[in-house]
Amino acid sequence: MASLLDGIGEKLADKWLTALAVPGLLFMGAATAGAVLGQGSALDLHLLRVRIDQWSAAAGEWSTVGQLAALAAIVLGSATVGTFVRSCAQASERVWTGDWPVLTGWLAARLITARRRRWNGIQAQVNGLRATALPRQRGPELQRELEELTVRRDRIALAEPSRPTYTGDRFAGTASRLHHQYGIDLAACWTLLWLTLPKDVRTELRSSRARFGVAVEGSTWAACCVLLGVVWWPAVPIGLAVGLSAWARGRGAAALHAELVEATVDLHLRALLDALHADAAESAPDRRLGTALTRIARKSS
Image (cartoon, rainbow, N blue to C red; front, side, top):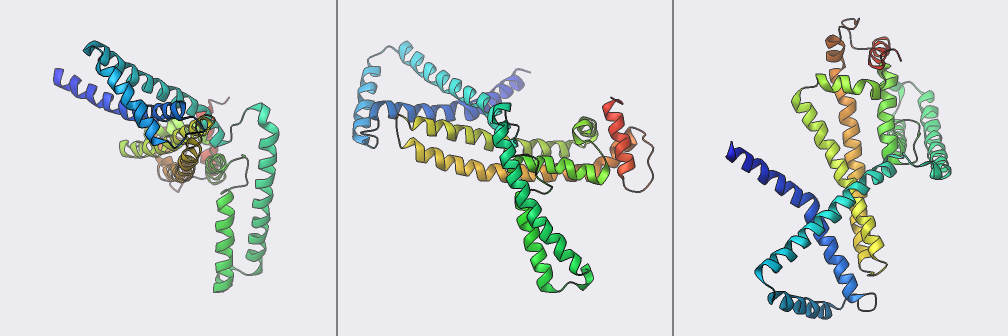
């Protein structure tokens, strides 16, 4: 038992150190460099090295207890910074998913209108081309043009935009597509479906969701770096680079998670219907069954 607890403790410590202390330590190092160098000597590495040598010499005269206390204070401060940024990442996720506060409603409405106008314009072209010929009568050029327009449309959203951001529409589009296909309210039915999923499916869904969370947290660190640029300008390009990386990874992670959620419903909705002993035909779930399932999940409310 003791060895098991020791192993769990080591794993938790490693996870805590990697997730909170290390990023916080890097940010504290950048903040310290900014405080020492300022804007005028932002890239003066010699000055920074001299100051670090002075601090090291002063710390060398401390007692062992004092040195350990300073080290503990640095680690604790790094973890505190990491914890603060992680808490801010919850607000960042609302920005990513388009769940913006009321005060920014006007901006969200304008972005939704612009995104919807672009999406509907491309969809009108798709509908027009589809109306010119049946699928079997379409030539290679027409089919290629249809595919290119479809890709352009899906880069905006898979369904008509209802959020001011790509990620928000990606998640909302999944719920819309599933409602259109099966008649289910994904938010109401998800908990019931989750409890019927095999362990490996739930693990994969957790992993994909965690990858998106990591990207969101990366964007929060990027914003902190840009703010640090007020006192040390090199933090701005660093923040922009981190932000661009987080943006690319976040879009990919959001798309993958949405695809996994949709595939999970496609593959396991029947198991949920059977588990609830819902009135179901032997064929694949249809909108009638999805409506019945939503009624069960909502408890007729």
